[in-house]
Structure formats: C-alpha cells, structure tokens
Amino acid sequence: MWDKIMCALIEAFLRPIDGGLGEALRYRYYRRRFASCGRNVRIGINVKLSGLDFISVGDDVWIDDNCILIAGVPDSFGDREVKYRDNPDYGAADGQLRLGSNIHLAPSCILNAFGGGIEIGDHCGLSSGVRIYSMSNHYRSFENPARITYSNPMTKGLPVVLSVCPVKLGRNCFVTLGATVLGGTIGENSYVAPGALVIGRFPANTILSGTPARPAGSRFSSGPEEV
Image 1 (cartoon, rainbow, N blue to C red):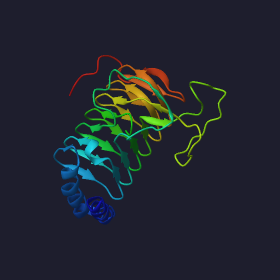
Image 2 (image 1 turned 90 degrees about the vertical axis):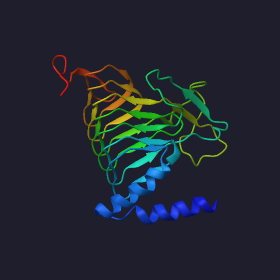
Image 3 (image 1 turned 45 degrees about the vertical axis):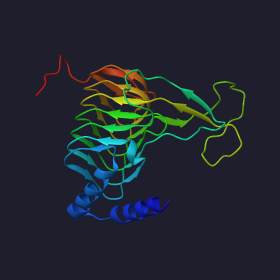
C-alpha cells in the first residue's frame, strides 16, 4: 500500500513539469516502471498512465501532452455481461498496451487497453483527440435485448454490458483528428479520416472514412514504395 502511495505522489509531482527537464525526469522514472521501454521516449506534461506493468514502449516514441494511457486486466467482471469479439491479428496478452518505435501520440489522445489490449505498429501517427478503446460499455444486452441495462461504472447491482475486442494498428497508420477505434484491425499504411468511427477489420493501404467507417479507396495508388 505504501509503495502505491509513494508512486502516486512521485507521479503527481512529475506530471506538470514542463520542458526538457520534465521529459528527462519522467523518462527516467517510467522506463523503470513500464514492462519495457526503449530509447528516446518523450512523455509530455499531464500525461496519465495506468497499469504501467502492462505497457511496453519502443524507441523514439513521443507521448504528447494530456494523453491518457490505460492498461491491465480486471480481477473479475463480476456479474456484468461481457461480449468478447476475437481479433486474430492481435498478438499480445489481454490488457497489454504495446507501442512500437517511431510513434507520435499527439495531445489529448486516449488509449484504453484495459480488459482487451492495444498494439500499435512502428511509424504510426495519432492526431490530437484520437480515442482507441478495446473495452467499452454496450448500449444493450446481447443475451436479452429487451432487458434494461445501464452504462456507467458507478452503477451497482444493475445489469451492465461490456464489449471487449483487442485493437491492432499495423505499421505506418495515420489516424487523424478526433477519430475513434472500438476494436478490430487497421492494416498497415492505412489512413483514418477525421472524426471516423472504426469498428472491425480492414486491410492494408485503406482510407477509412465515416461513422461507422467504410473503405473509401487506397491511401497509396499502387504498391507503396518503402523509403
């Protein structure tokens, strides 16, 4: 218990320190707390991180200001109804949040890997306000659609339904302003348009647009060349 209190105090002190000093101090602290951490990892101000031992970070990663990263698995879902959607492209354990190398998470991104899991491949870019959830409340029961259900974590003793599906972003995906991903796969070299809502599995080199997102062409016209 005292270890948790001490860590919480240290993190509260480190979060608001701006500039290079703050980034250096946060890197020195979190690289010892993450499951693994590479070189040149930048963590901006007021970044909130939960489930540190479920988070892995590669080299040259920038987690920009005010991002929220959540990982881990619950001890139990209790009496909640849980609908699991398998994602065969996801290769990590439940609740893992894995960031590859050469990644930028722009300010105010939310990555919630809790209960499901998130893998983000090398060279991905997430614009401000991108939200990725591998577990979320569902609006009604899968078992009995007539049942009245509830949708917030403070509801106790009443029916709550959760949808769980791991998320995989392939190499060099560009997910733009305010887009949301609720489980599934975005193939490598793909582009997600601003405000899109992505649910499901999509192949490489796809432009995704709309709510729900649908393929709207190819990002690269023919056989993208590697630099």
